[in-house]
Length: 295
Image (cartoon, rainbow, N blue to C red):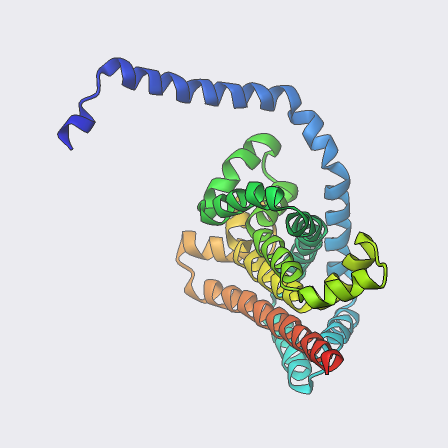
């Protein structure tokens, strides 16, 4: 292997020049179009700020009631309902309510964006093998690149703030919903599709009347994983100015505040468990309805 490290200095200089050209090109692009890109994301920033203020300024009993309604609608489980109530009361008691609401706001917005982009992309992949062959390597790269790397181009383009953090969270969290939407549609029984063809259904009727309903349990498994990955990104996103539970955790790491880090870390875990149980039980209920329909 010694020969490998003995390239002429000219080749090393070429590599150095290539790196410089990439850096300068991206810097020039940022200076030329950075303001336009920020303007494009301005409505998203306004909505995110409004959504966060809505959660923080709304009286806590009303917020808890809304969360309990969501938990009951998704899980239909008394144990999940009671656990959710106790968890949020405990979070409020220990003074983590505002940070939790900020985290909840960015996670919900990120999940909505991932679903809005990921499901159509998964449908396109299921429709075309060429699109699937093109998108799968991109998803592989997105899932294998360390999450800190996402922050570099996003911060260079948009600076520090909520929108860069939201974009980084979406990039990290979107692959599961894309993959599982594609998988769920492709796993629909061919006999069912042939039956819909025999009734004269066109492509869109088959997609929304047959494939999507049958693929919903798999799609909701993707939603579940997207939410979990978004929550996992909360602490990293706090490094670029995203408020929420990740910021106290980051401060605890910097200043060796064990109690502060554990409390806010456990609050993130609680949110993850609640979302996981609710979406899992909702997916299981949909799977049950699907099986009952087959019977």
